[in-house]
Length: 379
Ligand code: 0T9
Image (cartoon, rainbow, N blue to C red; front, side, top):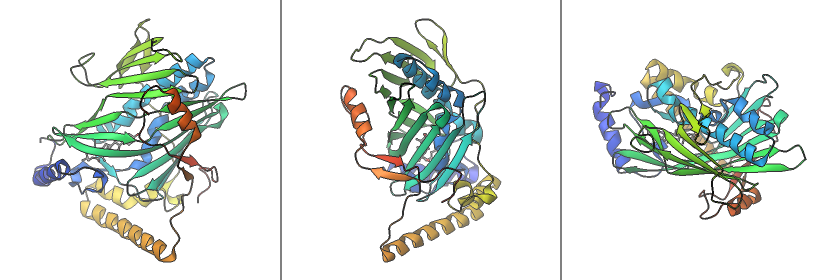
């Protein structure tokens, strides 16, 4: 592996061996320092809204079909941030910090040109296995995205195969007082480039966006050597209620540009800069807010002081273990700040029924935002 510092070659090799013989929760494996990211997984849900104008535009579409098109356009435009931004920012895909139970991440994207402010609330709702819940809303536009994210990983022909568990539901308030919902399923991913120590993500198989209006988007992902022969390719079909005859077809590169296949017009273009989430200053944060919680670990990783990073990480982990023991003794389990676990979600069940065939996600539950605190009120 060229990207592996020579002093870490043997630890990278043994790390690869351990992932090859391991399946389940990769987040708990100890990785060599060069592959550590100073950013926690609780920050990742921000990727959903780094093009807040495209998110807001969903509310401006006037018909069921146009809203489905706007949702698809916004969704495809998030993929570059979700799956390639660590390569751009950190040089390769890196191992994110494994969030602690109750870890929080708050942020917003300010109003601009009447698009409304968009708010983000993220909470780590489970540590074993890791599950992250998020709620993103634009109240001015009547939009709310509620989701949770977990992963099942395995190893296959030199790559890590990640099955995403979880889904998101987008709710759109319509002018007539009704709402429309969209069930968004998540693509599978493969982490390639491990041997060389420069991991990157390729998306595989198909993900879906099922609207309560009946419109369905099927998004098929391919890497090198398929449709266009290029990596990060996709092809999407939009079908009307009860039909399998596509009304719209799109194809292209999700990290660059894609087109409407019938008109040849540009559908998505993410070559322009995105808008990163606005986050308040660390010194006024609650202790459970991600950037404050991981501050010293992140500094160690950024400055190459891995001893300090690992010492600070152990402190956090020991403190967490003690908390769990105390809760056991007191018989008072950890209370979530912003989310409530709901075993069966009627909205999800309805959307799954509309979807012909196997349920598109493995999970039946949701973590519902309890609205008991806004992002500006610290728990
Ligand atoms: C939801 C996203 C998810 C989270 C990450 C697999 C992964 C953890 C989950 C799926 C976001 O919406 C999108 C993007 C990247 C995904 C991460 C990539 C990754 O490598 C990690 C896993 C747990 C590892 O850290 C594997 C070990 C590492 C050395 C490979 C770089």
